[in-house]
Amino acid sequence: VAYATYLERKISAFMQARLGPMRVGPWGLLQPIADAIKLLTKEDFIPDKADRGIFFIAPYIAVASAFIVMAVIPSAPDWGVITDVNIGLLFVLAVSSVGVLALILAGWSSNSKYALLGALRSSAQMVSYEVAMGLSLVGALMFARTLSLSGVVNAQAVDSVWFLVYQPAGFLIFLVSGIAENNRAPFDLPEAESELVAGFHTEYSGMRWSLFFMAEYAAMVVVSAIAVTVYLGGWYFPFVYRLTEANGHHNLYVIVSLLVFIAKLLAVLYLYFWLRWTLPRFRYDQLMDIGWKWLIPSALINIGLS
Image (cartoon, rainbow, N blue to C red; front, top):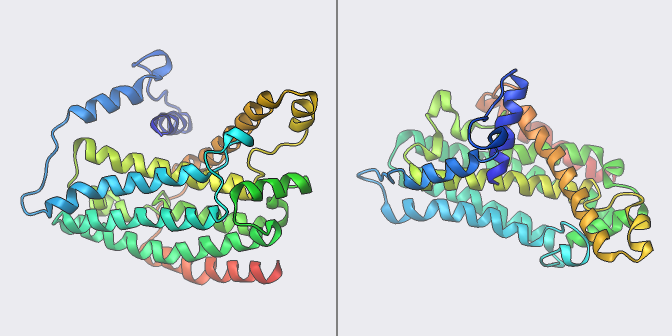
């Protein structure tokens, strides 16, 4: 997650003909560590009339909900999976929704108009796009016939085809919904700097502020990982099995599969960063229109056609 921030800064610099972080370590590779030290040593400021208990706990809820989901994502076969839950996808959707509750709590407890507006926007955005995200996955699940994420990858490996081929519309709907769920540009209305200063984390500083950013980037990794697992074959790649496992190199097969998964994950993350520096922010009415008038009907039509 720390190096996702480094990656974003380097990619944005590349797109704007700059160099990005270069001073801390070779090619700026130690910049995330320097940022962490800086944030740990900054003053932790609490507004005078904030609800202290909720204000304290909100960032931890955001981080925990993002990281817990990673336990069920299959990064590779065999020992590359932390735990294979038979309702893995349902678990992901349920737990990742809790992260938005943390944003609502943070905005409300800060006793700030900007933070409260950001929290209200975030809750409305979650309600709008969570439905489309869930419906977009149904089409792929009809082909996989299991809610286990490892089972979804194995189904694609058995068919020797990624579900992206069967479900291009579902993949597109999931990706747009995921970007909106993560409050990333062009859907970053809850933390619109030009209108709400920083939205729900306006009153946060120091380490608690950095926890919200950790949660955001962790959630981006999770959405990218689910997109890769369900639509892009997860750790499966043609010929990898034949080159490694078939020759008796089981551990090498797992390691190569893990590298395949990471490569696909980075490709989806690059798309996140690319969109941020390409598209302008939507107006709020446009955001709601896309969710309710386009994505949800499209997801329902996609299920019908499947």
